[in-house]
Length: 454
Image (tube, rainbow, N blue to C red; front, side, top):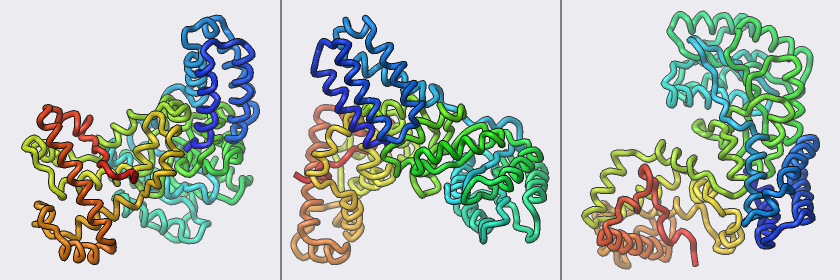
């Protein structure tokens, strides 16, 4: 997300910081480069124009020019305006009293049905809500069956399908069922089209008037760039939208849709889809996104994800083992599995400050995302005795483990060397009394040495 924009802006601000004292000409030159970077990231021209004007006015002020670190001051101004552009505050879902209807709308192919299931799962797990999913899409073949399958995967209820019913009849039945069964939230997944048309809008308006939803969320595909903003504007003219969900944000290296959406439509981005799995839906935090764009990292989100995914009991058990100086291959496997749960090396590194600057070095080091999975497979191919005592793994055992895991003996040797390095590190930390810092905040998994080949 935002990779190309982050790189371009990073180069601009690096040049500013190296100059020390800044004149008005330096700031104006930097603003021209920022303007080009934003336009290349597919940010809408009116948004870019207003953004640059606002930043330039502050950046050429005496407070910046006379500052001890003028380059840093310009970066702060850009950061603050990015936050403002993205919506300043995190816009939470307004659910109100149950049963709270949420109306999901959007074009076909935007990820609306999958997003409905993701949202249902999130509300159930995070908010402890009883959720009912209902498909109002009677046009697309198997659309209702698709939502039914996704509901089972998300472990939430779905409204039984009654052939021949129209969207309004399904809406009434969903609301009646929700009241009768004590449902907290009803998610209504409406039909989409390949393009915005009067029939689609008329149907949406009718459903909205009947359901009186607490939230009407427009789902748009971030990969479509400015088209996503145009679609949002078209829907906003006819439907009372309360927020926007941007899907496929993990695949959008430019990020123009996210940067333009709030300014053009006046509607907040409430959620973003960051992957295909049902847990890949996150709240949109303007402050954190702005920091990531400027390569300041998003450590808060990283820690939150770790707190969600890392089992507290497992972390406490590991802490006790480490306090005794014990660290076997079972422990290494647990750490590797936690890294995988958090999106692999890429998912973790993307949220760390300064990562954009070391992208080239990472590419040269040939960081292999599949390495972690291979290492887990190697450990799984070992006997319980071998995992507890790696010293007994000699030539014949290595050949057997390699055959069982689909790897080679050199891969086994690398893993064992990595384990020895971690074991030595644990022993040193034990002597220094720093095991808590080694475990990291809230059970944050430590990145094992050796993941970056030398």
